[in-house]
Length: 151
Image (cartoon, rainbow, N blue to C red):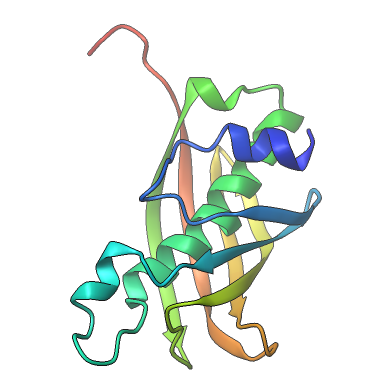
């Protein structure tokens, strides 16, 4: 599966899509990036005079790249189509070290800790454009097969 196909299969769209590109992906790791445009709506209120990217949004960006994108890739290796799957976050443990401001681009690097029984756990790090570590942690999620019965 190529990088463009992974992006096309993401279950998100703007304004809740926090992946611009995938730089590399393999069975054990993924790297991708996102640009936090200063026009994003949440900057209007977080904080009024000195906007900063909320930690929950940084966590979501890391989860979308380090768990969902990597999960789509790993699913493809098992011939399980992403459109027949749902992704659910199951746990996070994130340490925030530096702020991310409007207009900054970040790089997310994730390393698979384990993937079994459709549960993926990744060690994830986010870096700013200067290469400084912004935040890091462990994120886990479940890849659930869709129930197309309408229930």
